[in-house]
Amino acid sequence: MDNNKPTESKSPQTDLSDLLHSYISKWPLFVVSIVIFTILGAAFCYMRQTRFEVQANVLITDDDKEADLMRMSGLADFFSASASADAELEIIKSFTLYRNVVKELGLNTKYVIRKNILKRIEVFGDTPLRLTAPAEMADTLNGHLHFKVRVNKDGETSVKVYNVLNKKVFETDDKKLPATFKTPYGDFKLETTPEYEADKNLAMSIWFFGYDVAAENLQKEVRCFTPSKKADIITVSYLATNVAAGKRIVNEIVDEYNDRGIEQSRKKARKIADFIDNRLGAIAADLATTESQVEQYKQKNNLTNLSADAEYMMSKKSILEGRLFEAESGLATLQLTREMLNDPQSRNSMLPIPSLSESASKIISEYNKLILERMQLEKTAKSGNQKLEQLNDRIDALRRNLFITLDKSITTAKLHVSEIQSSNTESQHRLSQIPRQEREYIDIARQQEIKQSLYMFMLREQEQANMRIANALPKGQIIDRAFAKTRPSGMGKASIILAFMFIGLCFVPVLLYVRDLLRNHVNSADELKKLTQLPVIGQIPIFKEDNYNLRTEEFVAVATSLLFTGKDNRVFAVTTPEQGQGNLHRY
Image (cartoon, rainbow, N blue to C red):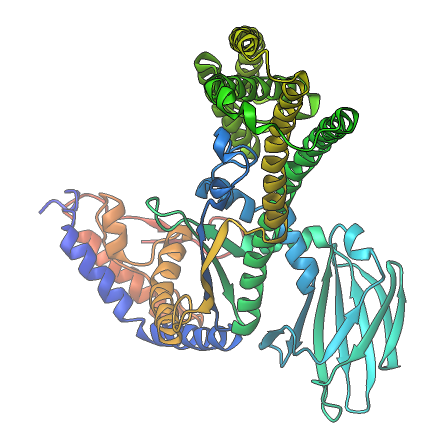
């Protein structure tokens, strides 16, 4: 038999069986590992605070579309753009909003009670100690300060203060509360609250953050998302260890968003009111002048009532007077539109749509749509946005075209009025018997009636604008106030312990596998057969005690095995790699 024949490799099933057998033989390690990791899992469950998900749902509405201002002129969407859930989502996630929430609720100060070496409990409004920072410090602090506080049963307090680099910057002992600590960052006051128990030891960690840092942390903890693209609903979600505090935070975020929306609605309504006030003042001045002219004319000509004798003749010209009134009203509307277009303060405002000129009406409708689109885009676009600049160019081009169209429409309207006036003049010639005073009075009264109509229209709109300022509504309609889900968030205690047990079960095989990867020697003859094609003649164990007879027997056994190899290898030598480590043996 040729012992130099390569050793046949074992099948994968055999290797797996050997591996499992080697692992089973080390079952005590598995037991110890599972017990240790089970204890770690229980410790983790003990340390871990249960967290509940607190949510609130807000429906995005667009009540500004119901604005009454200039609805007759097609300007219902003038001073506000339609609400978009995506745009409102960015607003509710904005840094400024979260900073206001942090400032309002005092979330920049975090209180944690250290029960023992493992247990930490974060408290909110029911904290036994309260830290008061210097005024305006939270606005300027870029980082945080960590206060480690210990209070014994006698009320003696020790405080250590660490900065953001975990470097101790202040330390004091044996203070009685309330006390003021003069740190390099300012004077901090620490005082007890009604929740403080004087006869017990207390250990707390207090973190004081700047408003900006606290707002960034809150942004990371709060999730805002749209659960469905088919409905304009925004969900605000927050994981809280204290359900009451979590509800307060979520409700404050929603309320801050709505307050911000109300303020924006009021600003828009104030713009409307300011514009109406300016126009109302000018129209009131014109109306007062016209009424003064009527009064002076009546006093000068001693007029009290129109002659009943002229009733029949006046009825013939009533049609012409009606047409003249309509034409002059349309001309006044065109001139008002032209004046708004030329007013720098109304440059970015939408324009009323005149009914007298169809061509001007179409252009103004397109102009109003572009203004509305730009207002919507300005909410989300940054300065220098290419689309916004293109939109401004289109609006400027359309404004220049609108100037030309309005000028032509006004000229046409004036010609139309002139034609009607000419026809009316011809009719007045037929009324030559009517006194001159009556004709002059009618002209003045007609101007008074036109200005009176415009004045009453603007007065109604002023009242509506004031009502909108007083009763502004937010775009967010609260569907659900903050509520907490009944089941805790994350894995339960049983699942966590099972997960740790599984890790403990896997830890030993991984450890053994890594140990085998790092091992640089052969443990058995079977392993040597796997690694080389050389025949294994025998094995010589390492003796802990120097026993010459036993070692000689082992070498003789190896030499005997060598005789059965069929080769002429009858002599071999065993020596040590270095001089002085042992004697040379020859067989």
